[in-house]
Image (cartoon, rainbow, N blue to C red):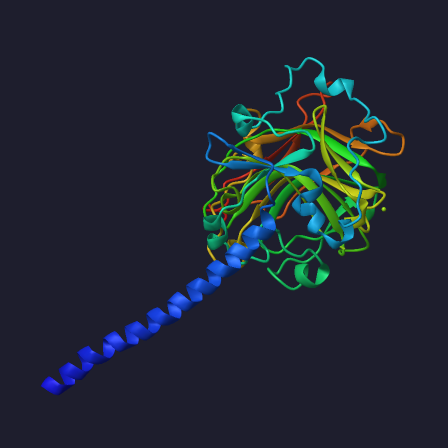
Length: 373
C-alpha cells in the first residue's frame, strides 16, 4: 500500500514536468510566430501618436503601408484624388442639420506629417487572442464552394419584374438589407445611423454597411464600407469605420466620407468589379460561429439591437439611399426590395411615412430570443 502511494505521488510530478516542457515549447513557437506577424503588419513609423483611448497611431510612409505587400500592387502609383468630381445630391441635405465633422479621437493628440498615413498599431495581445494568425483581420472566403456546403444556407432569390436574381448567404453570417440590382452601377451612397450593439463573444462582429457586388453566379466579388463593432480587431466594443473586399486576385473604386475622399480600392486587386457593380446592398451583417443549426443562436445584436419595427429613435436606419450609374447622377434606385436571412433574429423594413417623403430603411435585431433560440 505504501509503495503504491509512493509511486503514485512520484509519477505525477514527472508527468506534469513533461507537460510543462511541451507547453513552454509550444508557447515559444507561438510567440515567435506572433512576433513575425507583428513585424509584417506594423510598418516602421516616421512618427507615433498615443491616443487618449489607448491606441497607438503610427504615421507610416504612404508607399510603405501594408497594402503594398499585395503582389499586385508592387508597381502601383498612388492617385491622391479622383480624376472625376463626384456629383452632389442636393435633396439628401435639404432641411437636415449640419453633417458631423470627420474626426477621430487620436487626432486630439497630434497629426501625421504630409506623405504619411495613420495606421493603428497592432499589439501582441491582440494576435494571441485570434484563432488564426493567417486570417487576422480577414473575413474568410466567399465563393460557391463555401457558401453552398456550409451552414445549410443555399441561394435565395429576389424578384425584379418577373426576373429572379440569386443572392447567396455567407457561411456563419446573418444579414438584413435593402437591395437593388442592375447592370451599370458605378457608385452608391447613404447616410448610416451609428450605434454600439452588443457583441456576445470577442470572436464575433456586427456591421452596418454598403455592399457593391459583381460577378457571374455566386462567384461574386464585393467591396464594402460602413461601421463595425469588432472586439477581436479593435480591442473594444466601439463602432469603427471599416472597409474590406473579397477576391484579392484595371478601374478603381473611391471611398468618400461626406466631402472627404478617404482612399480607394485599386483595380489591380479586383476582377469582376474593375468597371462596375451589378448589385448594391445597404444594411447590417452579423458574423458568428453560432449561426449553425443545432446550436444556441448568438446574442450579438445588429444595428441598435432593436428590430426594424422600432423605427426612428429605436432601430438603426439608413437614409438618403443613392446609386450612381453612367448618367453620373445620384438618384434613388428605380427598384428596391428588402430581405432578412433570419427574420426572427434580425429583420428589415423600408418605411415610407407618406407619398411625399422618401423611404427610410430600418434594420436590426437582438439575435437570440424566444423566437430565435
